[in-house]
Amino acid sequence: MDISTIILAGGKSKRMGQDKALIKINNIPLLKHICSEAQKLTSQVYIITSWPEKYQPILPDNCTLIKETTLAGPLIAFSEALRQITTEWVLLLACDLGNFNSEELAQFAHQLGELNSDYIAYLPLNPKGFEPLCGFYRRNCLPLLDDFINQGGNSFQKWLNQHKIAELPLTNREILVNCNNPQDLQLINNFQPQITKDGSFTFFSPEFNESFHSHYGAKQEALYKFVIPCKLPELATQTNSIKLLDICYGLGYNTAAALATIWQINPQCHIELMALELNENVPNQAIKSNLLNEWNEPIPELLSQLSTDKYLKNELISAHIFYGDARVTIQEIINRNFIADAIFLDPFSPPKCPQLWTVDFLKLVTKCINLNGILATYSCAASVRTALQLTGLKIGASASVGRRSPGTIASYNNPNLPPLSLQELEHLQTKASIPYRDIQLINTAEKILAKRLQEQSTSTLESTSQWKKRWEKPAICKKE
Ligand SMILES: C[S@@+](CC[C@H](N)C(=O)[O-])C[C@H]1O[C@@H](n2cnc3c(N)ncnc32)[C@H](O)[C@@H]1O
Image (cartoon, rainbow, N blue to C red):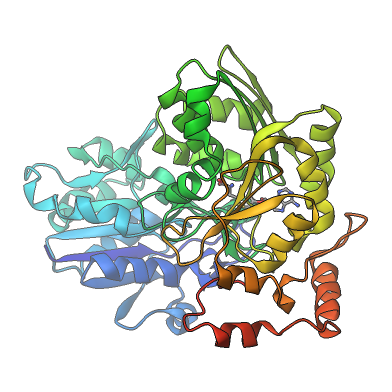
């Protein structure tokens, strides 16, 4: 069906302290982002505003600016713009929907033709009423709107209450979040759910300039890079008690996948979990965005409790999460003599977060693993593998799933580590294998990177590019 969009961009942005339409989210002005998303769904995009000249330079091609003449609020601006619309339905959007994406609304746009003709709009519902500025309206609601305005009305809610509105059953309510003030902006900028190829969502970190998961699939990554390589399915058949250490807990996916796997195989298994995470906003935002609902209850409920109370105990699980720099909080785990059967090591990539890939940090981590326990990580960087070997662990490769590179698993004594290929072994003889170091565990990323670069510059090891040339398909590790 042919639909148009109207974007209301007349607000004064008082609480934001700067023009909301122009603030950048993931480096793109918010109004431009909303226009581009709307263009994916609708044939024409109109922006109604009092200052068209200000927005003209940032708009995508083929958007039409309408100069707002009345300056009398959103309802009246909507009626002004609606006069220009020729399509039967129009999508009305606020210009401050920081998480807006058209994909979420696409399925509902296809349903418009099936709505009874007495519905004037198709809008999401919240506990206070309908959400007027992120949904669809019939163009022929204009006379009703004019009547209301002519009688002195200017409230969307009051107008909508007089008419039949169909409820649009949004699944991802994040797209409704308004970016009203600098705090909202920070939250949105930090953690905007982004879909990955298996349909599960991840976040993007502007601070580390990296996604929290592989774009091939966040949920898949948790299972195939962490839970299965740690052999938790086998362990769950052998014991009624499993201890897990989740380093860089993030959204909680690795833990969630582990709990689901273990309890599916052995519903009686008691799990003791220790988790380390820098930023408590990450798990809290994941819960608020319902991202843990990828797993069945009781997992989302348990992990919601863990992320807010930092502690959880019932007959099946006892868990702690420690917020702060893992280089510090790992000491809590050591002090408690916690010895894990499985460790998930999941920091951002070594070039972005070298602090958590150093020999010095990993030496502390490996104090917390039992002799047959397995540490799993998605990284196959030669520097990481060498650092793990320097801690005394033996290493093996985990299967490549989704992306080209395999991950790494490591253990003191577990006999079941799949061996590295010759190509991978030779990688460990190149300059890429020089590990990151941070003896006092206090250095910045920049210092750790610079120190390693310097060590590489004086090393007599083979250059990594020569090693790559020697192998026909140099596909081992993108990040090194
Ligand atoms: C790749 S993400 C982890 C994804 C996570 N395992 C999951 O399943 O959702 C990396 C995480 O490391 C955290 N992080 C970054 N630096 C850290 C540090 N110094 N100590 C602890 N956590 C850190 C980030 O906040 C982020 O949540």
